[in-house]
Image (cartoon, rainbow, N blue to C red):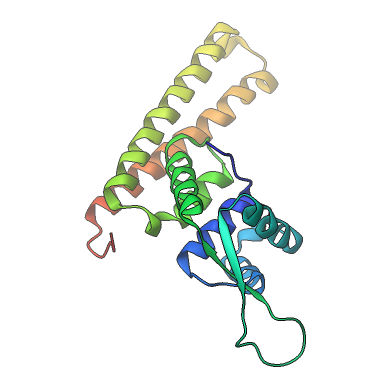
Length: 187
């Protein structure tokens, strides 16, 4: 699979959610949804990302001839079939295999309307198993290193990620439950 940067993932997602969108429109939506704070997406990375995505043939553009006023005509972007396929793979991977505290997971959550409810639930169950395995791996390593006999500054390096993973698992379990109850799912 072709890995996308956070900004490329967000851009593909936003184009998929509102086909025929300009870089300016994407930038406004990124601001409105707060993506800058948690996905590290700057204005420049949006325009650079659009260029890269167009070169990779994930998006196509056309000039917006309906624009009035000053300045050049803006480009309106839409997904290509290749872009749609790549986005879906990125969403599936982000929902299934991303680590705790991962912007990729948050971007995949923001993309939930682009997958079916069944796919989302299956991916989240896979993520829960993945995180449980990671917690077991960290716990085993903690025990191998001396467990409760370790100095606090060392043991906290194990207990901190374990606490985060446990909270993440609890969140995923609740999300699965909520999604399974969701009646208004479009797909």
